[in-house]
Amino acid sequence: MKKVLAGAILAASTLAAPAFAWEGKVVACYDKVWVPATYSYSKELIMASHTEWEWQDGQMVKVWYPAVYKESKHMKSPGHYIARKAACK
Image: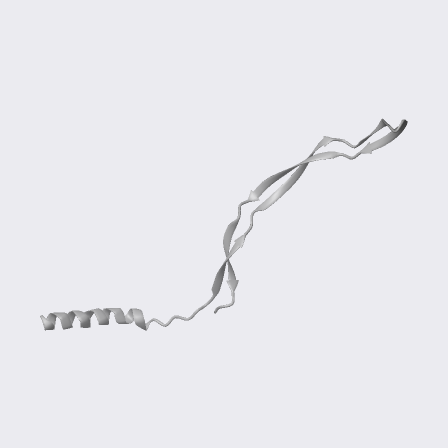
């Protein structure tokens, strides 16, 4: 029994030795970096700018109203991770 156990330990250590002997060289290092989503914007004219005559404190006043726009936001690409080259630690 001792010979079988010793043989198994010897066989396991000789088969595992090449895995422990590997000494590779680091070629490049990368960090995981989050890239936020990108959006495109468009605007739609709701009401054009105009002037109106109004009564204020008993007199006629010409009042200017600016244009009114509705802004739409569209996602071009969702947020994602990329691998960016970095200094090795």
